[in-house]
Image 1 (cartoon, one colour):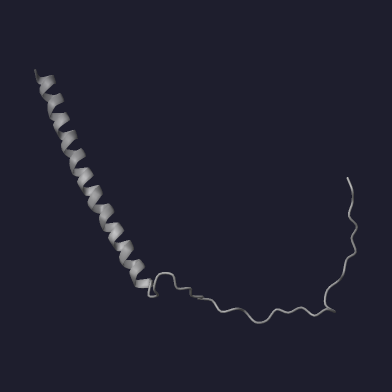
Image 2 (image 1 turned 90 degrees about the vertical axis):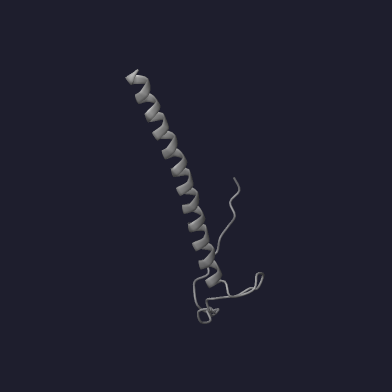
Length: 78
């Protein structure tokens, strides 16, 4: 009789912990999702679909024709 009672108590404790953990996990995921969306709204000031460039190009990188070495090559047939 004591063994059955112990098994029932452990089963009830397991089910209660499972239900409470599921509730806490759902609320945690909702909270994280809400915080993520809030952060995205802060940084998204432009309308959706607008194109913005945040980095300006580094100076002009033009190479003179006299600079560098020209290397002749031959195509090899296999």
